[in-house]
Length: 218
Image (cartoon, rainbow, N blue to C red; front, top):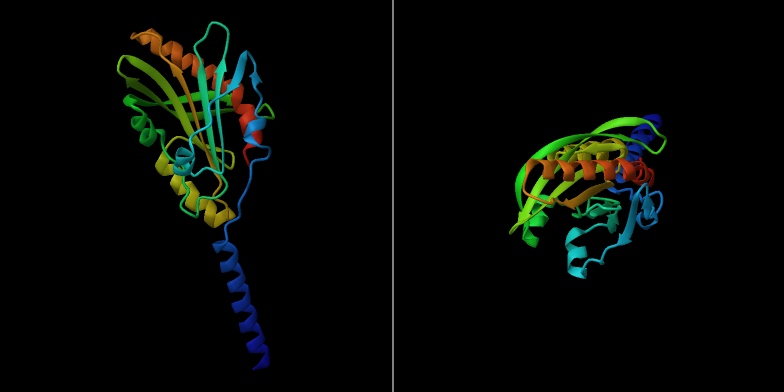
């Protein structure tokens, strides 16, 4: 009888410990602060963007964010935003640019997906699929690439990112993730102008991806 009670007690204590472990989120920080992302990346030279207003930061809910503009000779600018969340269990979750851009007056006029050939920090090649959007305000147009990145995965779909969020929370007790967005102007109204903007963003993402992947938790 005593042996049974000891075994049952051990099982209850083990279960309680497991439940406690799973219900207390593990907050995972970036390997190095996002601010340490290089300013100079290949032919791109970065400049710090204006800090977001406190109310915007509150809405974003990110534990850490980066807002920069990168310039290359004879090229329009490329803006880079990275929002990193150590945990998404307490209601602070990643927001899709499709929810935020209209608030600034930019309307999506075309939505698509693009597959880019990139390399990790160690030089391993891989193909990643990201969202590609054309947005417009009055006569101005811009192209946007964005994706969700967590634990080495690059995910385009917001719904798929939520599924992985639940899966990794159960499997790893982790809900950390980042949303990455790059934007560049489209100079002109023709298809070749769209292609030029897409090529510019592709080149920039290929340049920054190894460095960024080295900072985000794997």
